[in-house]
Amino acid sequence: MDSPISTDENGVNFKPEKMEKEKLYHCMFKNKAMLGFKDSQDVLNCYEIEEIDLVERIRNCTNNDDLEKIFDDYLRERNLKN
Image 1 (cartoon, helix red, strand yellow):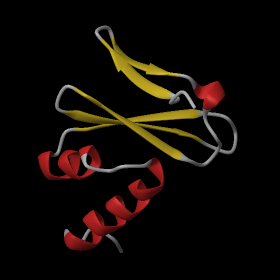
Image 2 (spheres, one colour; image 1 turned 135 degrees about the vertical axis):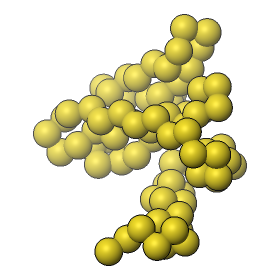
Image 3 (cartoon, rainbow, N blue to C red; image 1 turned 90 degrees about the horizontal axis):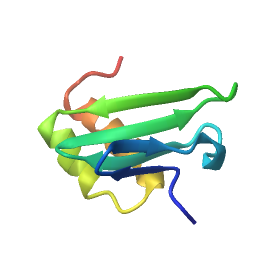
Image 4 (cartoon, rainbow, N blue to C red; image 1 turned 90 degrees about the vertical axis):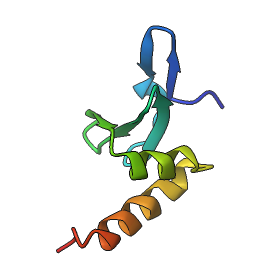
């Protein structure tokens, strides 16, 4: 299946019509991780991550299903979760 988020020489391309609701997608652009998420009301949410350690973890991620675990681990390690 074609990924709903991709990059080319012009930047990042989003195809929200190919996204499942409530699922996180990612791609890499330059030295940043780009995230996309379509919520339950079909609103597209986009995020850009520059933090080097987190970008590397995302870069090594083999599938979108592992993204949530990466973020949970990162938050726990940094003591950022309440």
